[in-house]
Length: 347
Image 1 (tube, one colour):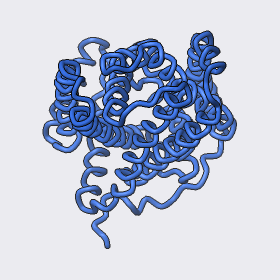
Image 2: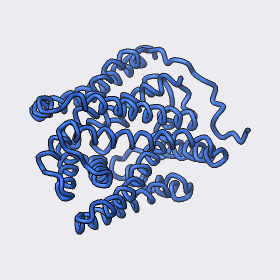
Image 3: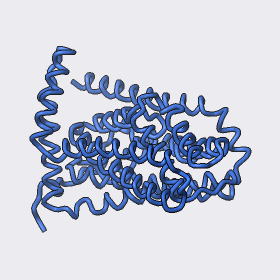
C-alpha cells in the first residue's frame, strides 16, 4: 500500500514536471521576440506594469483561494493561494484552453490526498466569474470606443458582434453551473458519450462532481456575501491586467485611449482563452495586434507592446512561480481547516 502511494506521488510529480517543462519551452520559443522589446522599452514605465501585474495575480490567487473555501476544499489559505498562483501562471503562459493550469491544480490537490472534485467544482465556478468579468469589460470598452474613437466604424461593429457571441457562450456556461437539472442532464450525456468512446465508466465521478457543484451553489445562494470578495477581486484583477497593457504601450512610446485599450485587450484575451494551441502561440498576440491596428494603432507598435505584455504579465510571473514548487511538492498537506463554510445557512 505504501509502495503504491509512493509510486502514485512520483507519477504526479513527474506529470507536474512535464507541465512546467512545457512552460519553459514556450519561454524559449518566445525569446527572439522578447530580446527586441527588452532593448526598446523604457524601463521606467515597465516597472509600473510589473507592479500592476503583481496586483493582478494577487487578486486572482486570493479570489481562487476564497472560492475554494466556499466549495469546501479543506486546505490552508496559504496553500490554496500558492496553488492558485502557480496554476494561473502556467495557465496564462500555456493557454491550451485552460487545460494546463487545471491539470496542474488537480495534480497538486491529488498529491495532498484531497478530493479532486472539490477543487474542480471551485475552479469551474471561479472561471465562470473570471470570464463574466472579462466579457462585461467588452461592452464598456465598446461604449468608450464609440464615444471617443468614432472612426472605429465597421471594425467596432464586428467586434461588438464577436463580443455578443462570446457573451451567449458565457450565459450557456452559467446556466450549466447554476441550473442543477440542466447540469445533471449534460453530465449524464457527457458520461455516456465518454463511456461509448473509451469503454470507461466515469458516471460515479461525474455524479460526485455534480453533488459538489450543488453544495457550492447552494452555499452561495444562501449566503450571497460569500462571493462579494471574490467578485471584487476578479474585477480588480482584470483592471490591473488592462493597466499593465497600457503601461506596456507607454513604455514603447504609444499612448492608447481607454476604449481602444479595453476593446483590443478583451478580444485578444478571449482569443487566447478559446485557443487550444499550446501557449496560445501567436493566437492571442496576433488577435490583439490586429484589433489595435484596425482601431488605428500602428501595427508595429501594437506587436511590440503585446510582446512586452507577454513578457511582463506571462513570462515573469511564470518564472517567479517556479520558486513555489518545492514547498508545494512537499508531502505535508498543510493546515486542514474545519469545513464550516459550505452549505451553512448560518449568520
